[in-house]
Length: 340
Image 1 (cartoon, rainbow, N blue to C red):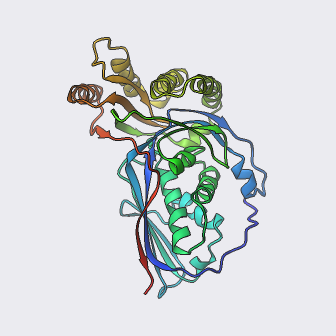
Image 2: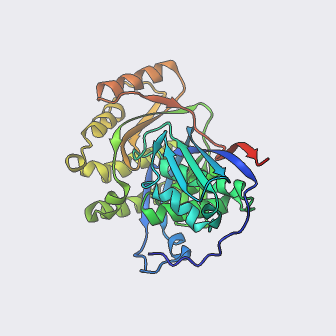
Image 3: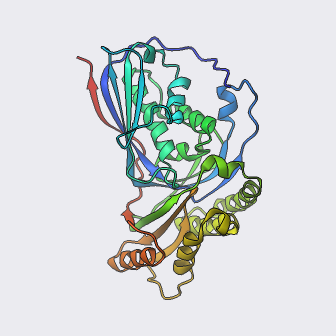
């Protein structure tokens, strides 16, 4: 259980509704940097945990809307894609807890997350929802926090609930970023993304982040391969090196557990594209999202490339391929409705 040493705020809300958009994000590789939390842990303990590694933000965004009703008692309702997750969305609740918002005891708050990409499939959905919640609360209660400080609370919530280790920092920055040090403050290196590059993704389901991070053989592989990946990307920051480093990381980690994790489809698709000497020269390669049964392909924009990639996805049993842009802007405030 945490030892919460913060001071709750008595700030009154200034807005009735706030809407925030935070990009989905893919991690291509990572190195776990954590430790066992003490029984009475603090925010400082959580902020020392994280990962090294990273990847790109996507043009598809999680849209979080926070609404307050001053006429109703202090309840918190959380909806994800229209379904009630009030008892399950622990990461969202943790964000509010670490921000010390005692105002939730005075007014009813509803938080709605709209997630266009599948939850739990390696698209940074929980991190985007956590960061969107922190930014929305910051705006609604006029807390005066910086974007990085909002990210700090979101990162704490992710680590506490084992839903992520390093996604939030990259979502704060936007673009393709590599965490050079774990935890907070966010220490990021940005990779320039050529304007002609695009990304296509499809998924066959998710992997449990908490279970994967707790499995000793998988953890060992991730830590060993993650260290090598960081050496590789640190020697040359480019999208081509990022993708090749990610492919090598996946081959050394997840594809060593294909049957255990049901990753046959992922392996087949990666091999089909990466080993095809006749593929269009505009297709750079394919790798696996961290962590999900999902594959992404980076390519130079062309009809030929998209047709080739879509056929490869279908041939390997992946449906609903989505072609996207990279997002380099990070979070945005979409709407604020002030209290009348």
